Image: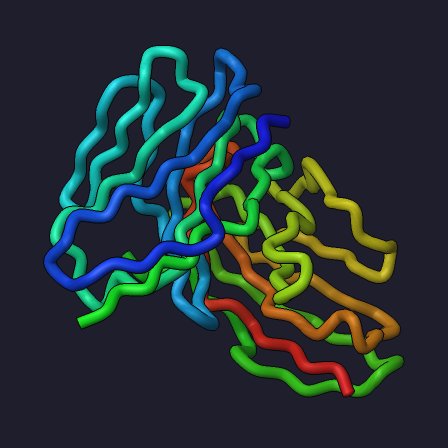
Length: 111
Length: 113
């Protein structure tokens, strides 16, 4: 199972772009990279998923280098409501049992 | 579409009791997974169901059990509750086989006294 490493916490200010990097050195060929956001006492919310290069949706962008050993979640112009824990997951789509939620990155946005 | 719903949202039990939690997946979703989240252990996988069959089970004692019905709704049961079972229990659903792209419910907060 591919394990991920993320910073424990990050701080930023409203209106800034935030980049959270995740390391996954043992990523397998079939693995996708997925990011979730979780607010206190709520279930995680799917943000974005990618396999390689760059993926963008209305919420975030995901940058994946050619070797796929890391990925970067980019949140443009953050607001206070982006304060949450962000999880990077690596795995294939065959089973939830293969998905490991690490400690996540606690992002704090200040006014 | 309505999201994943879980009932009850909050629950207080005492040691030795049992509890049943319910999860209704998003309409059309056939896969339901359960997770336990605690401050110390984070999010841990409990079970995964697809078309009424348990496909995988996490590393939890036999006191934790679950099932899925023909309408994809799922229940999990914890018998002989222990203080350490206090946690947020999350249910997630997906269209096909579960993977990363899951949709989580709000969770059931269980407190064992």
